[in-house]
Amino acid sequence: MLGTAHHLALGGAMATYGPYFEDGVAPAQINVEFDISLHLHDARWGIRQRADVEREAATAGMYLRARHAMPANNLLLAW
Image 1 (cartoon, rainbow, N blue to C red):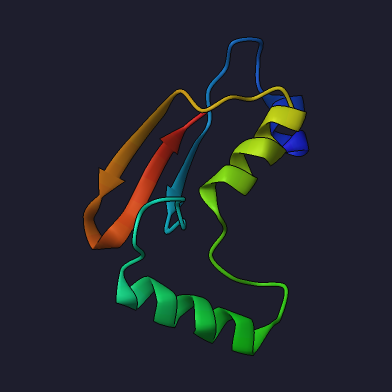
Image 2: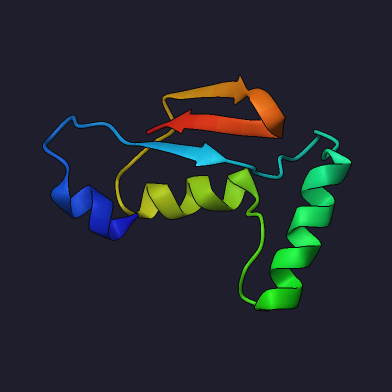
């Protein structure tokens, strides 16, 4: 996030796409299984909690502008 914020023009935007876990939203079983497979490959990998990503973005001065549900249990997040 810090690297992206460094390269964005003032008022610029960034989008991220993929699966996220969200507080209060039951995860799709396929995402739970995908998360497990990522952890088995490398313990540092896995699907991130959206709230954690938002906190990381905020430390770089970026804030969530929009959340769009996408196919295959993914989200498009606009920052």
